[in-house]
Structures are given as C-alpha cells and as structure tokens.
Image (cartoon, rainbow, N blue to C red; front, side, top):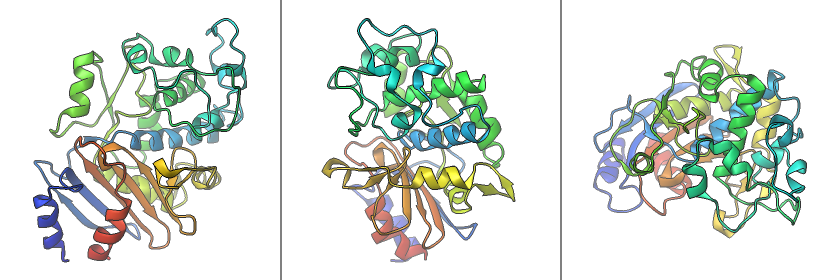
Length: 329
C-alpha cells in the first residue's frame, strides 16, 4: 500500500479506521508523514480522551524533578490537609502518588461516580470521597479515570498554580506547542457535546468549575502535538538540548509496573502509559476512539493519531504495526 492508497483506505473505511482524523509520524526527529481526514487539517485539535492521562504522568514527573513533589511514595493526604475523610475511613491515609499513577489505588463502590463528581463544584474533592475502602491497599489494578483527578489536585497544591498553567509553562511551550486554554463550561449538556461532537476543536483542556483540568480526559491535541510528545520520550527527556523531564523518571514511567489482563490485551502498565509487548521497546498513551501516542524505540519512530468519538475502539496498535508502519518506513 502506498501513501495515496492509505489515504483512500482511511477515507473510505466503514470499520475501525472510519473515525481517524489525523496522523502524524516522526522518525529520527523529522516529520516523515502527515495527513488528515473528515474536515480536519493538521493544525486542528481533538479531544484525545485518555491520552490525557499520559500527559498527566509527564506533568507529575516534571513536578517531581522540580522538587514540588518529594517522592512518588508521598501520601495523597499530605496534599489535602483541609479534607476530612468520611467517618471510619482509614485506607485513604495509605494511598500514595505511585498508586494513582499505576492505577492500583483502591476505591469504594463497583463503578466510578461520574454523576456525583461531574455535577460537583470541585471534582477533585468529590472523587476523594471514593478513595480508600475496607479492603485496604491490595495492589489490584483498577482503571479509574476519575481517580486521576486527584493527581491534578496534587500538582496544583504542590506547585501552587493551576495544572493547565503548569503544563503550558513546563511542557507545551518549551516543546513549541500551542498553549492550552481552559474550556470553562462544565454543564451536563456541554460535557456531552465535548465528548460526542465530531468537529475540530481549539487547543483547550476541559476544566471543572474551579478551573482544575480534567486529568483523565478532555485535553485537546493535534496528531502533530502527540508525535512531538513521543519524540520527547525517544530523546530521553531532551528537546533542543534542554532537559524537559529527567531520563530517570521517563525510564521509571515506561517500565512495566503492572501486568494487565484480557480486558487490556495483556499489555504492561507503567505510569499511565502502556507497554503493548513484553519483549519490545514500544510504548503508548492510549485513549478511547483510537486516540494514541505511539513510541517505537527500536525504529526511533513516534506518532500521533486522533479520532472523533466512536465506541469500542480502544487502541490503534495493530493498525499502526500492520498497516501504517509498512507504508511510511
């Protein structure tokens, strides 16, 4: 398949590729392929859903490098002295930042309290009500999008600025990427439109009524943005010979900490980043609808793919490996 054929294949697809809006690929620090579909240009942005979590992991690492966070084993409750847990709750005092990053933090209830949190005035404090539980710290992997909201609160309180400002100052602007602006409306109707709307978006980040970013979803990026983030990982934290994030933290972030089950294709999990293959140096930040940052250290390739809302597309790794890479290598 040639590049022109790939364009037509995605344009005409009725299956998993039917929602792809942008692809951008970098190799050895240079852009080698870029294309867009469905009314998007390369300069547009899309809600990349849970790829947002991968960016939050980078922000946590930068805060750690700067000393605002002392250690990943620092207790979550250290950052919320004004929060009073519910009567009888003790497990919450044992939860650390590392538990949040590896999705091994415990939560009460069988499902995430979306309605309670997303209709509250402070989403961080609202999800803290669900942290902990009678079982204690078990080390069990529990994917919790809302739980990452706590990480945003930790960054804000430790760095003494809004997470979006911290991200702009320490990540986006140093990489030459557009600054993100807050998406201020957080009504039920607006949240639904933000997730479902298939039009291009501006460079924004969804926020709660207090102005805290939605840490588990809601960051808007272009495929080009994501390829550059991947390039940062390939360069071990350097950009234009300047350290953006430490090599040591990135190695720890990408190292397998949890082995996932069938629901997650038996991938490995680091700090909010996936390692799809046990024996290969391939890593990914993965979001719903097939949004992905893909980093291949073996081929020195980084790429981003954006897509509009489409259910039951968890990742693009197979498409990348079997269809995209053979075309652009």
